[in-house]
Length: 309
Image 1 (cartoon, one colour):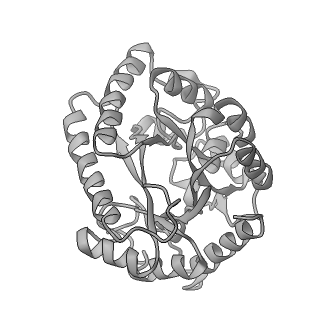
Image 2 (cartoon, rainbow, N blue to C red; image 1 turned 30 degrees about the horizontal axis):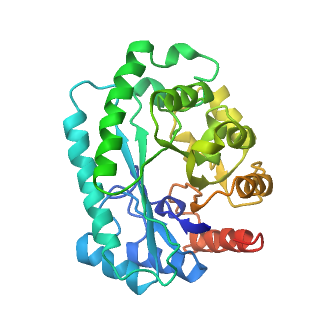
């Protein structure tokens, strides 16, 4: 069973904006927009943004929402940071525990949230989004991949000890971005894969090929539509990663170039079961109408509902 959620990044609330940009929406307003649109769940966003402990549990329960997952970056390239990363991971998993302590959803098929693990990247990778597919010198050497594998194994073990099955998110401008890097990830770990249709395009991949090649490992979905001309311009300009959001590479379903219908068909053929998190990463823009993000996410939900989800 595919269960549809949304994410705070669709409203401009993520690590680059929360606590920084005054236009980030108030969390209760965001949760109400997600619930009103008919989503079953919400991704966490930065820890604490949607609330903590009893506050988070109550906010979700009152709106009939379940927690779909939470994003977690580890600085795999930095030696000596793993203990700190594990402490931060425990904070995320404590938040999951709080959210999952709510009354069980009426639909027992609602899955547990996924710890969504990603590499933390570097200044070099942030300055070169989408370029590693052609320039492998931007990636780790064999020693780097070995170090990554050992660190990731500890993170995966901690998630499983706490009762949550993790997923790995290949993310723009990190050391696991291009298809060849995703292949290396899957070789050195048994972690499941988060298919993010937008970030995969930026990294030089293709969502349909990804399902064909890695379908047996996909255990979580971030579904975006994206404009390939905007992505190509960012890569051609050697623009920094922030331009992905500033130039609005990600857009409302049907306005971009991701073959979402074909993606859904292939996922159904695989009998994929789990969360499908709708994401339309944006930066808050004072020129947008105040309800623009809520309207876009309601339209995205209707797009999926018309396709049987």
